[in-house]
Length: 269
Image (cartoon, rainbow, N blue to C red; front, top):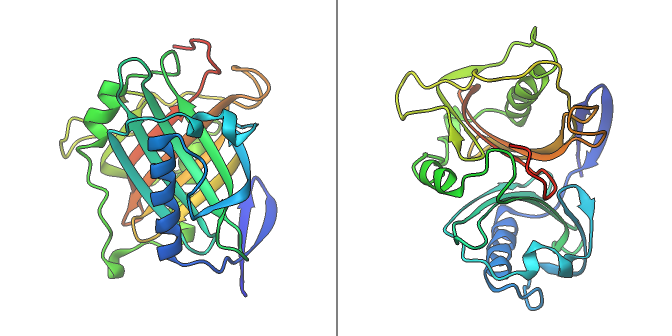
């Protein structure tokens, strides 16, 4: 079993390579969708009997979280990280009474190949730039197809592009591999118009740290989702905002960025 090395803010972490397959991860995200659609936690083959669960960066009982609610999912997309035995799903719920945009990371146990950890970033009315109509409109029109094998970026290149984007919020000297076109979907706000001139390098603040990053990477789709604390050293409080940034990287350049930030039930717009 080989190891994966990840460096985040100078800290070297060794992750044992997982033993799962893409098929097992796909089955896990399929089960996730069924559970979220029905609100029934029992009976999903991929779910372990005990699952470590966080919602908006706080530990809680899985049975009391968003997965216990039956939601009508209007749009979903999943990516699968075989080396880490992890997966990511983006779920959009357009129901007027209870709209949600949810970013879910899940991890399988190396021995049982069952889901042992789920981390959810859940956004709804009052959260940062939340507009589910806009989110659904733009997300459903983007192209996130598999990238041809000979054109795929390495895991390292995909993560480096995401980290450069995250780091520029606190250090404007960072060189970010901006693509063109590139479009950022932030809440329901979109920087693109479906044109070749679309750009992502707009509206980026200064002096903001994006910390405690957790990654799910899929080279087949050129994607990486990063769950983290946005402005973790101040501005929005010591813990920062629970945040998900997902990136699509094509040819080493950023193509799409999807961001979710939870305000903890209080309006931060």
